[in-house]
Amino acid sequence: MLFTQCHITPMATFCRERVLPVFGEVRCQAGERVNSDHVIAFADRASGFRLLNLDELLGTSITDGGKVLVKRVGETVEKGEIIARTRVLFGKACVSPVRGTILDARLNKVLIEVASERVELRAFFPGQVIDLIPGRGAEIEVTGALIQGVWGSGAEQRGRLELVVPDGETPLTADRIVEAHMGTILIGGRTLDAGAVAQAVRNQVRGVIVGSITSSLLSIVRSSPLSLIVTEGFGSAAMNPGTFALLRSYASRDACFSPAVKTRWDVRRPEVVIPLRMASQPASSGQRASLSIGTQVRALRAPYENHLGQVVSLPPSPRRLASGIQARGAEVVLESVGRAFIPFENLEIVL
Image (tube, rainbow, N blue to C red; front, side, top):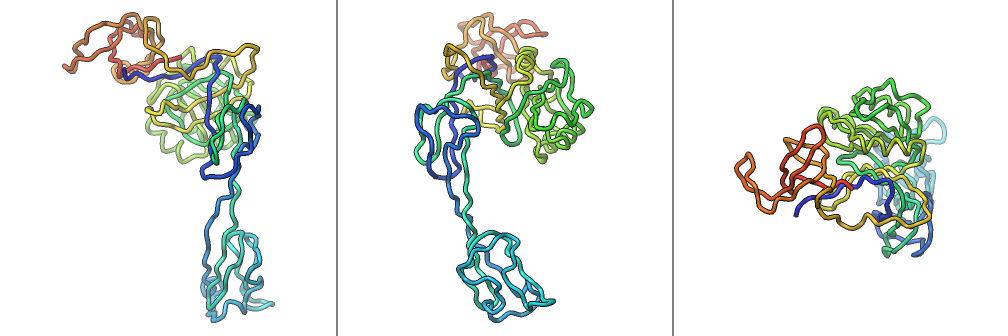
């Protein structure tokens, strides 16, 4: 069956991979407990070379670059540091556009090797390292609440959850975002508008969670530094009451906010993780659930797109749809809609 899963749970244990963009050195051990800021791996990434044209930068014809250099070949230079000058007094100067080492200077050219950049990989999720990925990173076991969405944009963030609307029906507007929200992750309601995006950026909000987003706002969000997670879909759908209630129950707690969109086939979604501690180990959410009577589901496509409900029957035979094709599916009681037959391909499990 082709149904997918969407995890919305107040407590679970699950695993998340943390990997470097390039090969490097892993600095943690299996079984080690790590916090969010723990550097678990690093790599020195080479940045290439820069060839400077002294004629253009100094505004005059240069026949021997070595004679106008202030720094010598082999010396390191900082970004913005003067490396060549036509005269000591009242002459034009050329500064290095990068940090690096001068490799050569001849005729009217200067070659700089850009200094390597150290990339550090932090655990991001507090938890326990359960496996190492040689040269790349580690797999971390996390315990906490998990709320997965359907779309996201922006960089991963960590911050305190802040409730700014009374319920999942209320849109997030600019007047609800104030300076005191700097560095927080806002729990919104139905949707948001361009004014709210601008106000969130202005007040340096780290992230926003809303139920839905209109297509006209997609380009605005993508071009802004704001990190955003949408829980229901596109349009103007309210945030599901269960999702809103779960987020509201964890207001004022720190959260790990991962808005990067992954493919549905990879079963990895934008998500909010609220790390928690508990005496007993909860059941892992890593196993695929089966569709059965009583399972909570969400409809993925029209005419019931984004509606939540509960499976009440699993007919053994295919049924003919309005389009004329036959498909196997489930009978679902949808909130505010009632009973409907939905093909398995149009369902996802909400855990």
